[in-house]
Image (cartoon, rainbow, N blue to C red):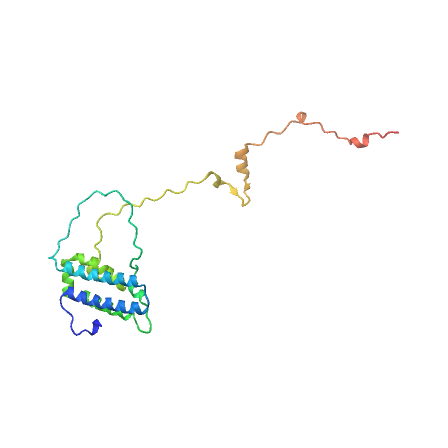
Length: 228
């Protein structure tokens, strides 16, 4: 294991490679024993190999100066490329969760890499390298996420100075014409007296007595004479 290694190189690239090559072997051994999907183990192995090569390539370059991005016109959106059938997992500490703790303690592989990466980031030589090569943060940030580590201040993304566009709020819903009425579950409407007055208008004037229909005040049945 790396923590018991008698010698750790001073060169950051060699030390980074030693940490993650040991992690590659541990992931391969424990993944085979836990019967993890073989193509996924190959993806993890290749990913770590690329990170090791990228770190060495960037660290070997002369100190970088911050670039000023020129404004370019955006190209028209083209058809999205189809996603590959198998990709690496995502989320915080996904490699630790991929190898659950068991009788053989396969999580020790990730735990050792976590501890060594923390010591690696605290090394003054590495801190000086990150100050002159800020693009190394693109390699170290996903590696920290993979092992469940929070980003140290030296690799955090700088805050953008661009003002955020104001959020356009949706206009409030205009009240509907039927909101003023009480609608029952069966579909009927309960009108208030004021609403009825507004819909039907004022009540008609009373009918004068001489216009009212004639209603006799006597009982016709009693007055009907029976025959002989």
